[in-house]
Amino acid sequence: MDWKIAGGFLEKFKKIKPPKIFLQEEIVKILQEKINFLFKQEDIEIKRNTILIKTDNQSLKNEIFLKREKILSELTKKIGPKGPTNIRF
Image (tube, rainbow, N blue to C red; front, side):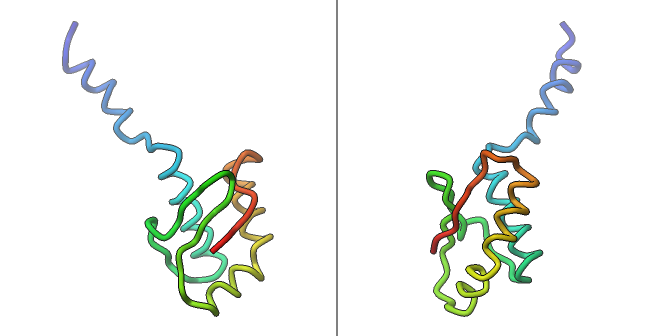
């Protein structure tokens, strides 16, 4: 077997991201789009279908809370019905 061919085939799999990282990236994109604030991936956690956002900014928390339904519906469109269903701080 030619190792260059096998290496080329395996190269495709380097770009595949674990589900948790993919979800964090999508949530960061949606939050940036909806509330115009850029979060870091480290500020976002997902536990038991709940998005946990780490922030001390009260006005930012209020903004996210007010737009929670829009954020979750956009996430459902991109990821599907098995995505997170709640947002907490």
